[in-house]
Length: 222
Image (cartoon, rainbow, N blue to C red):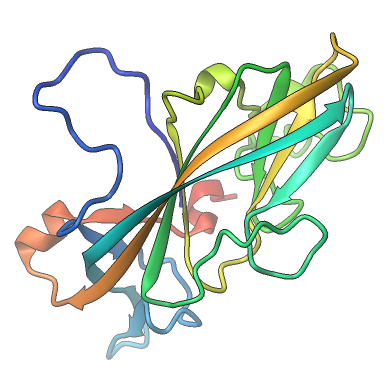
């Protein structure tokens, strides 16, 4: 559900498209609950299995979010369509549409954290106290735990990818301004790759080629 691609260590020619393309295959992992009944099925043993799809068509839309935040404070950005103070409606409204959101930041004195659902950090360590802070003021050490910086995904070399579907729990991006400035303007640049999905019967070849879309519980696994 969220990926970060490493910076390239070699130039490849011809280049490989960064975004999902027409004709690509995807598979929703078996961890997706059966409430997503157009993306999963229940087999004869009563187990929920993720389905395979081929991308029928794509459309890319650019979108920038800009916030001015004081030092030592944060702004939560809710990607979902759920009605909230900060929701940005970055989820599809059709079960057979997948949004692939590629994001990066312009240079700023900031830290970013990802949560799904709200309050549950995707990245953390196993010891119970080793989670990013949630309440202000942020810990001077734990604020850097699992935090993304602008160099991790620059605006013109976006490396973080988020995958959203209809009715997914709210995905939250928390933008925090670190010490050293009075205010900071944080610009998040996004490319929303809207992918129309067509169900397919999985062959061995399709299974090998398909990109796996994980459920968020697999990302955290604690």
